[in-house]
Length: 127
Image 1 (cartoon, rainbow, N blue to C red):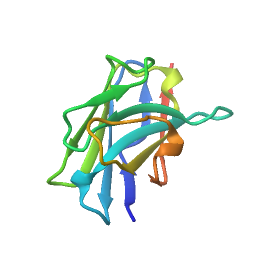
Image 2 (image 1 turned 90 degrees about the vertical axis):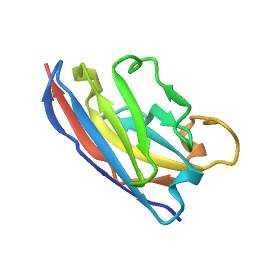
Image 3 (image 1 turned 30 degrees about the vertical axis):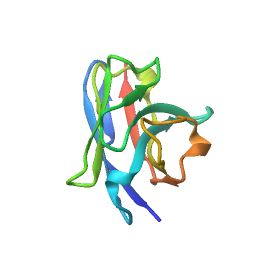
Image 4 (image 1 turned 135 degrees about the horizontal axis):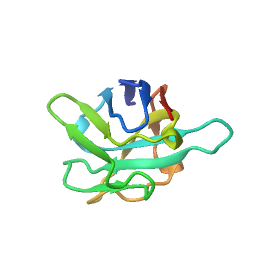
């Protein structure tokens, strides 16, 4: 089992920045691939970013590429999502997710492939 707790959400004006954190427990952190997803009202949950076990590989949705950066600190069992140049379309509940993955890289970024989820943190961006 993996327990995930997100923090760092909040309210920001367009163009601003926020950093989300996700603390993991219950399993050796360096054995799990971490991801970030989001869900806006009335929309399906969508992939945002992911990072491999060692941090050497990352993946991003086209909508956030060059604005968001995912990173991890395996010594602190924590993954981060730095969000810059925020837009109103970034408004959503952001979820941290984890999957046990034995391969290299990240594998599939589809939500059903992630086994563990945090409770979510709200990010609201005003125009």
